[in-house]
Length: 112
Length: 112
DNA sequence: CAAATATACATAAGAATATTATGTATATGC
DNA sequence: GCATATACATAATATTCTTATGTATATTTG
Image (tube, rainbow over all chains, first blue to last red; front, side):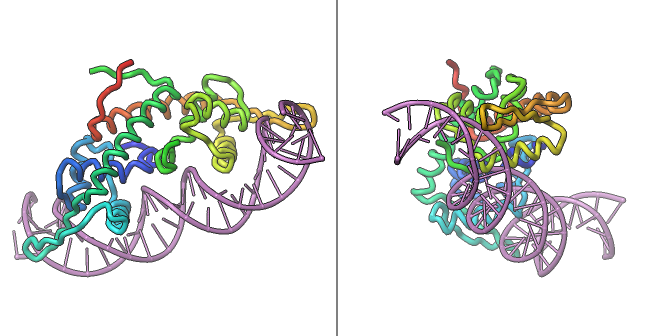
């Protein structure tokens, strides 16, 4: 687990990237996928995720579809065309940021 | 210039790294050095930097020394032993974080 | 089969960190 | 002389996250 301040500002980028690869995902699924993919190093809390998803929706970046699973509900999120563009931009910006920070912090590139 | 959310949480790491390389720096100098080193991509605002420096001081991570330059003052910051350890830890943590994010966002390593 | 854990949504209070604005003052370049 | 640069600082506001709380169903395990 990283110190919480590190992860700040990366949540939207992570969510958009996952949605750009999966077409539709629901909130809880996103938290679990990130946990899995990062070997528990990044754990998205629900208190952070749900408000972010709601903001993405009101910004027209994602649309939602509610599905009944037995007696429970799931809210699936899908990128809009605007969201797809946004996802690429965010990831590119982050990649650029990483390079800038690597240079600034004199971090060696890790091969293999 | 990156979107402001991206830079959040990296300020302390940047300051500690610069101080670990320069022995002593003053606030304004830090803002200019970062601007220079990142070709204007990261611009630390004074409203963010000064409170952070004060926090580092009250945490025992840095000590200060006020120097008169003509009629103006400069406040030089120096890492304490604790601060030196902290700087290494912060940079290492960020390096690890970068690798995790590269994997998560499927960002290719940029050689050269 | 009861209890604990996992799934699944949501919001609210509070903390942390940054932005923007403002304030003060000296120094330098045109 | 005026604009810009140097150099500190704080306050109001905004943003984003943590932690806590709430509701409810489903599954696993002792």
